[in-house]
Image 1 (tube, rainbow, N blue to C red):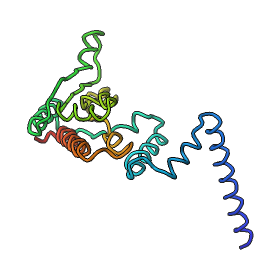
Image 2 (cartoon, helix red, strand yellow; image 1 turned 180 degrees about the vertical axis):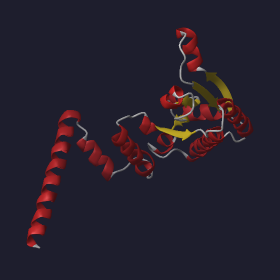
Image 3 (cartoon, rainbow, N blue to C red; image 1 turned 120 degrees about the vertical axis):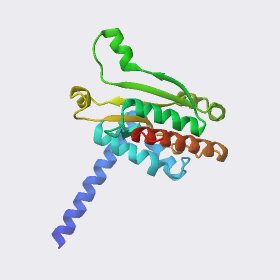
Image 4 (cartoon, rainbow, N blue to C red; image 1 turned 90 degrees about the horizontal axis):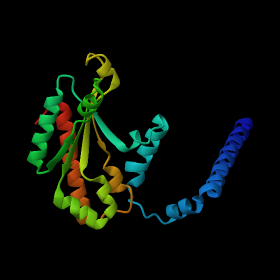
Length: 213
């Protein structure tokens, strides 16, 4: 028993030394240690920021090594739903929800015209609630970089190469949790609007993937 306890102590000591080494390295290279500690002692972030944003983002980043994968939400399009069905469903839901379709970008079609080579399907859909958008920008000019809300309908490489016999199509959008919960809590009036936009975009994405409207 004493041998096991001794082993556990040494393991804990080694873990502590490794953690200390990395903290010191970060402090020397980036000066972040004191900042991290101060924020932990006197948090300014939303109380749900770790659970809804930073831990899921970190886990995805460590799993994939791709920061873009860590900041999006993707839904698989049903096999029996055509691209035209997806588009019709999304436009119908957007209209019903009172959010404006402000443009579509048929990227794969454009590249095919430019190169003369067949491309896997990729089309970007853009939506905006103008009054909500202005309210968000009034809070922070940086919100303008998130506008308009976008959804991307994309055919994965395997689906493209097999003519749709294998692989999948996906609807991608940015994870709005980062904007809603990633920093200091939003004012109540803005939080209500942001949550409603998130709800609408989720409805459009889910309905589009299912061809349901």
